[in-house]
Image (cartoon, rainbow, N blue to C red; front, top):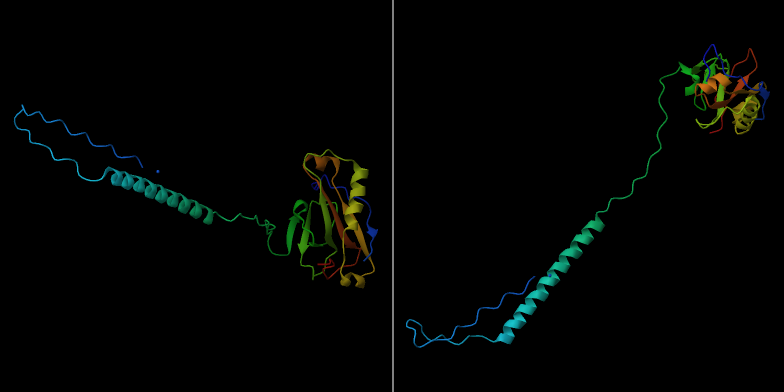
Length: 217
């Protein structure tokens, strides 16, 4: 919003509102016996059934493969079973500005805030509890994208009226017969400094006050 020496546009005047393993290598074959060479004794014939040994080797390969497959399946099941659940981002809570009453910059106004002695041209306002006397309550707001060009005063005024139409009042508002709508929007110079807010306030006529929250929850 604009500073004290460069106020925001107050906007349109306040208007009345409606409430797998490897195979083993085979052994070396027995060497022939030369009876002319001393020291060699006749070697006994090989023992065992070659077919049975082959079956044992094949059986060992199959068993090893099954174990390997079982390990792979176990690993996959553990990986799938421990996959983390997707996280859902939680909404970021609004900043806590401090206890009431407090002086608040216009850029920090929040919908529902109530203000004592509200001045639409000021860069700050005194925020108070809505059950104490106040002269304005922020009912709705719109913020333009930061890379937008200044749309012009007429377009801002129209946007302000549109924003005000979105306000819904509660039954307590029926007790007040002098409620008005007040638009506040950027000036060309405050826009150049980054101001993009269009606000709509519920206000009362001069000399009157409000002592309730007037917005429908």
